Length: 338
Image (cartoon, rainbow, N blue to C red; front, side, top):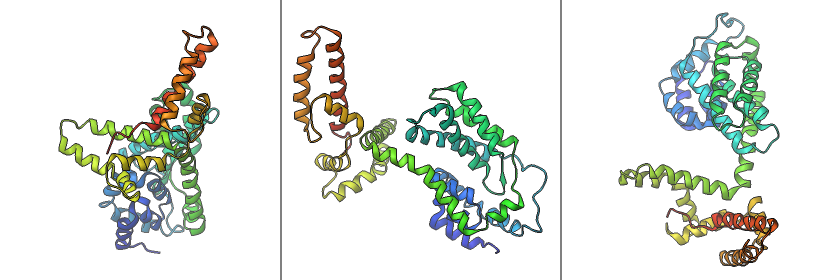
């Protein structure tokens, strides 16, 4: 079926960040990439305004798989695609660090496989692809060199991207024909999206407190950069805190401290495992108030202070009490934004 430029533009405007127009054109890898990155973090979706006619023409040229065979020469090298491979590889690795870090052999197996999957996804956009096995093998070989390093994502992604470029090729006729079947296409996209989002979603909701504080600290750090431009800082703060303002409005109040407190009481209702352990150390229940936490901390700190109880056991317990108190204070501290 011949694809229409007008229909593609309409789908781009309606569901572009989720890859709806790419799904219409049969570019499933591109659609999945847009689903997982919200349109290439927004920049790719905007850039496609001038690229859509070329995408439609490409889809129509390769519509008849029996008459059109893929060229034997490799596809042309694209700096944009290479940069995308590196960025998405790092992005997939970052998501793995957030949601899967607790798994065994994470840095040796899980992390490189996730980075390689991100690189291969970008390399498979459009009518070309690369060698998945060689890309993943490169990641597995590179990963031990930078084992445990916070900067390991960059060299792993770079090595995988170079390998993907070296082994780039056009997709075969069999692959193109298989991609035209609607049922399997939807199944593969749904399965891939679930595999990507499930670990991240579990980690985010299982560690709600830490996640919210981390996000608030990121917003604070970003706004502090613009201290010399108060008007720009105010605009950015209004935009970045819009989700909080909506939640605040839903709780029935204005944008003031008491309302923020009510929002956080709703969102931070569940304790993380670390906070439960801190409550146990301080001999408190899950319903303990800030005053009760402070009182229990002072009593236990006085009891186990090394000056009153010399010995290794007392010193260890005193340190645990201090750490438990700090963990619970991070949960109960007032939010820094109104």
